[in-house]
Image 1: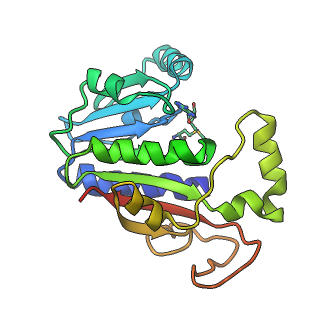
Image 2: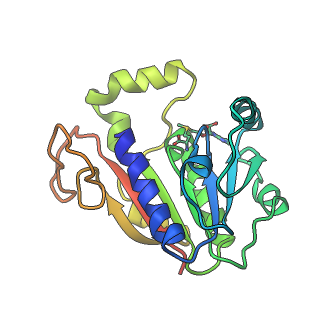
Amino acid sequence: MLPLRTRFYDDVIATHVRDGPVRQVVLVAAGLDARAFRLSWPGDTTVFEIDQPELLADKDAALAQVRAQPACDRRVVGADLTGDWIGDLVSAGYTQQHPCLWIAEGLLSYLPGAAVAELLRTTARHSASGSRLATDFIGETFLSSPAMAAQRAAVAEINAPWLYGCDQPEQLFTSCGWLPERVLQPGEPGADFRPLPFPTVPRDVEAPGLPRLFFTIAVKP
Ligand SMILES: C[S@@+](CC[C@H](N)C(=O)[O-])C[C@H]1O[C@@H](n2cnc3c(N)ncnc32)[C@H](O)[C@@H]1O
């Protein structure tokens, strides 16, 4: 799933930044994402990385050790995404006057439901028309499926429990100010970059106990 997910976001960036007009990218919960270094960016692109301050400090120390040079204007923003972080982003140079590509990869399952909705509303409120938000969801089915019990226990054990799942991303986007553009399950066209060891079950097929997940992109009307 992770190679698939990585490629999905790389392609979203290629479409909207490398081959498109967007020059402002926010990696929401960037973690150790190395896209600012790994990808080719148009020369005038700014990439903001938001995450916990301690994590970003460790990341920057590791990057400095190998003298890594970003291929864009990279700006780090240490902040708590369940708090009031937008001011910190604006202070770092983010502007609502230009469209933005928000990437929230591997984040939402770790936040309480109310914080997920607030994050979506905040990004929509502070986005120019035509901005996009790409993110991924585990389904509620992930939180309840017996097949995922061992993984649920493993992430809880390392103090990063899965808190939130969503099986209807379209409804969530719409209720938070975003227009859903693509909601893909792994294995469907656009998220089928390598063969999977199991078939993709269409969404309209009821499959009790099947853990679903989604790679999504939404646009600000
Ligand atoms: C699974 S990692 C994903 C990192 C990266 N986007 C990726 O896909 O490789 C989740 C990230 O969310 C960050 N995170 C979780 N809760 C956060 C919060 N309340 N504020 C800021 N960052 C948070 C963690 O520090 C971690 O880097």
